Amino acid sequence: MKKVLSIVAIAALTAGFVACGPSKEEIEKREKEKADSIAAVEKTKQDSIAAVEAEAAKAAEMSAASEKMKADSTRMADSIAHATKGGKKH
Image (cartoon, rainbow, N blue to C red; front, side, top):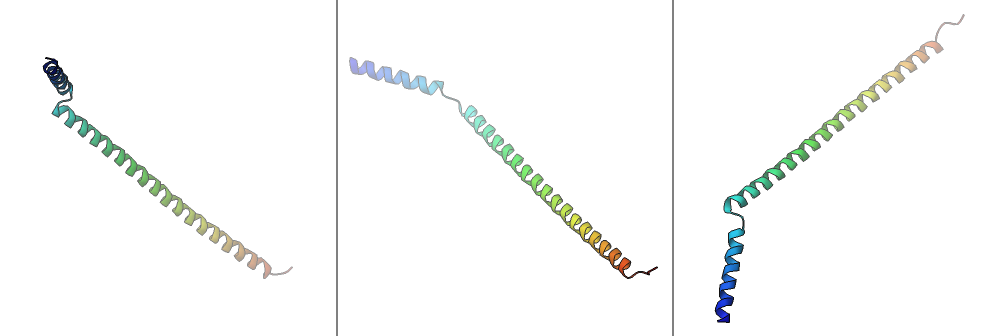
């Protein structure tokens, strides 16, 4: 009698656990939501990397322009200094 009662109790608990679990549709929905979330994070990450690379390229371009302006300024100053040294004396 105890064995039969134990088997019936185990069968009832097993059926209860199986019946209370998520359905196939719920599992698929959760997996899809997880995949969508991962895709959104990956897209955000790629967008962030692209923005940083664009900012770095812009900074490099500005640095190159700054160096060119500095070189032009130095060349102009040297030109003016050279012109005033060899100028007419009064």
